[in-house]
Every structure is written in C-alpha cells, then in structure tokens.
Amino acid sequence: MKTKVLLATLTILSGLFLAGTVPALDITATNSGNWGDPTIWNSGTVPGTNDDADVPLGIDVTVTTNASVQYIYDGGTVTMASNATLNVVGDPLGAEGTQDLGLLVASAAGNTVIYSGNAFWAKHQDYYNLVLSGGGTLYNGEIGQDEYGDGAVAMTIAGNMIVSNRVSVQEADDFNIQGNLILGGGGSTNITWDCSVANLTVYGNTTVGSGAKITDNDGALGNDTFSNVTVNAGGDLYLLDSTNWFINGSLTNNSGTIGGVAYASINFNGTGIFAGTPITLPTFTINGTYAVGTRINLLTNTPGLNGTLVFDVASPQEVDLATNAGSGPSFYYNGNLDVINSGPTPMFDANYQFFNAQSYAGGFNNITLPNLSGSLSWVNNLYASGSLAITGGSVGAPVITSVQSGNQLILTWDSVTYPGFQVQSQTNSTGIGPNWGNVSGGGVSPFVIPINPANPAVFFRLSNQ
Image 1 (tube, rainbow, N blue to C red):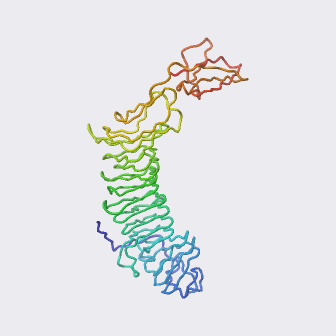
Image 2 (cartoon, rainbow, N blue to C red):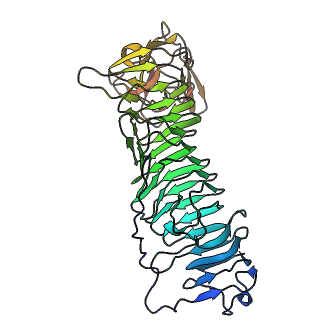
Image 3 (spheres, helix red, strand yellow):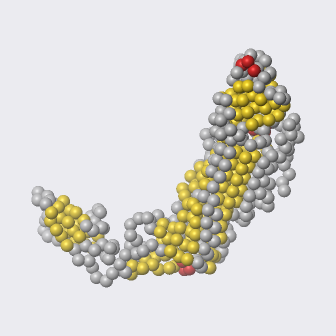
C-alpha cells in the first residue's frame, strides 16, 4: 500500500481575489431559512463571493437557487434544494472551503456544489453533482485538520462529477459516480485522478480530456470500473494495475494517449466497440462482446480472448500483437469470432487481415461468417496469417439482356450468382477498340443508360476483368 503524503503547502489560487474589491465580511446566520433571505443574516445582507458564512449549530440554511461564498463554517447545516447551485470560491489563502461546516446536505435531485477554490477543502461526503474547477487536490482521507472530522469517507456522486483547471483527485476511499465523470479540457493542466488503494466506479460515461490523466499507482488494491470511456487529445489513460481495470462499455480514442507498464491489462466485460484513432494497450482481456472499429496495438503478453470479437468486412481493422525480431508471443485464439458485413457483397479474391502476430495458436470456439453469393467461399487463414480470404466463383458468365424504354436503355444480368461483373464502355467512331473503361455504378444490375441520339455512338460490355 502506498503511503500518502500531504504537503503542508496549499495551492493559492490567483485571479479570484482582485485588489479594490469589496472587503470580505463574516456574516452569521441568526435563524434558519432561505440563503437568499437577508433577514436571516446578522448583517441584513446575503453572503456573497467575497464573504464567509457562519452557520451556527442548530441553524439550517437552504440554498434554493444560486449562491456564491468564500467558505462556510461552524456547527450548523446548509441544505441544497433541487437544482440549486452553490459555488464555494475559497478564502484568499486557499485554506478554507466547507470542511469546517457541521453538515452539508447535497442529496436533492439536480443540485450542484462547485468548489472553484482549493479542492483540498471540499467536504468529504455524498453529492448530487460535484464540480472541482480551481486547484489543489481532493483527498478523501483523514487529514487531521478539519474540525468536524470528515476522515476517510467513501463518496457517492448521484449525478455528474467534473474536474477541471488544475485540480487532482487522490483516492483514500471509494468513489461511486452514478452519472458521468469528466476530467480536463478547456485549458486544464496537470489533472491526475489516482485510483490507488480504493475503488472507483463510474456508471455513466468517462471522458479524459486535455491536460488530464487517470492512473493507478497500486496494482494490488481497489477495482477501477467504467462504462464507456473516451480519451480525447491531450488526455491520458495510463495503466499501472495488472488485473483490476474493468470497462463494461466502449473505448474510444480521439487522438489521446492510452498506455501503461508491460503487465497492465484492461478487462472488457460488457458490450461495446473500440473506436476512433488507433488504440495502443499493453494487453487486454475480452470477456464480453466487442466490435473492433479501429486498429488495436497490443504491446506485450498474449491477450485473453474469452468473449466475442466482432469484425466488419465493410471496414476491416486489425488487432496487432507486437513481435520481436525473429520471435514473439503467439496470438492465442479463444472465445468466439463474429465476422459481419454492413456493406457491399464481398468479392472474389478479397483478403481480410484481422490479426497480426509472429505466430498463432489455440482456436476459436465458434466462428460466424457472413453469407457469400454464388459459389464464393471463405478460406480460413487464421493460423497461417491471421486472415480470412474469399475464393471460388461461378463457372461461366452471366447472360446480359437489354431493353429500351423511352430514352433509356436498361441492362440486366444475374449479379447475385455472378458477382464482380462490371459494365464497361467506350466511344469510338471507327468501331470497337481495346480501350474499355468501367462505368460508375455499373457493378449492380439493373443498370440504366440514358439515350441521346445527338451524341456519338457508345459501346457497352459486361466484364469481370
């Protein structure tokens, strides 16, 4: 287990407190009521961005719309109403937030608590929507400095969690995010979510944006479980955990960085797709059903194929297992291979490279292939080259018929039994010559040709060359 070291130096946020602004006031709630009601505060004014709010024990102040304050303290309660927003900007020294408040109730549907100051002083508890947009590190462990002893607290975020600007998160206890997790983007820098020690579970979508990294520096403790994960340009998904990363949805790479140490692996347990720009992983284990929609480069180790891999011949991709000079690990087949076709009918002599390795071993439990026309058939070269090919074809040639209808000539033939035949044409005033060219769209019957008597003569033929 890693030893957590907390630095005494706290992040001081610049740009939040400008010279010449109204001096900060310490405003005390004298009665329970609505935060926006000036009569419940001793100053007769509602606390603002430059003020701190003292909520004594026995008093409950409810935020019903939008409120902004430096920090809140004392033994009382602040309750968030549905869809209300509270922005805690922190004091000028970056040393206050809500940790010195007795109770912050933020469970109402749709409410949002924003810490735009130092995230270190965010109260360790459950939230609906939580936004960290300033600086510092949220560490949900025992820090020994908060009056009301938040300690190591497992945190549930019922909605979305957004981490931006210069904020990082260091787990000491579990995070359970039932909505989306959005990290970085918009000029954020040096954001790191360290999943070490505890469990991170995200039920919605996870986006790792510019300036952000998700990592795990402890390969023995905690499970990190996601649904759909997207890594955008400037984002980093870095694996230092050998067995405890789980993705139950899709993995999309939008020119981000996905990598890690040699033994690190992601377990794909649900149903999804690998999409976007090429994805590089140390290795993976497929337990669910996953479509390969982009090139996957596996740097080391034999992957675990326990579920189903789906390839589409209309847009074929590869899974590559890195090889060393002259020798390398075998790609060990297991599970199921499902080949589909969402495009035109495959043609004779087509070859589809699905796997690339130094050698191949094992065997798929089941291989499903799309139907082919005529006498075309599949050739299984998976053990020799990691590919599938198409061979065969109907003997002879189709019979072409022509029918004139008004100013149109309609050519028809059996393009199902005889795939690969193409209408070609040439214009030659001296008769038929050797210069034939394919006609756009002429690969499928029927093919319609406009007739214009004013144009020169045009010759047509059907060819599979």
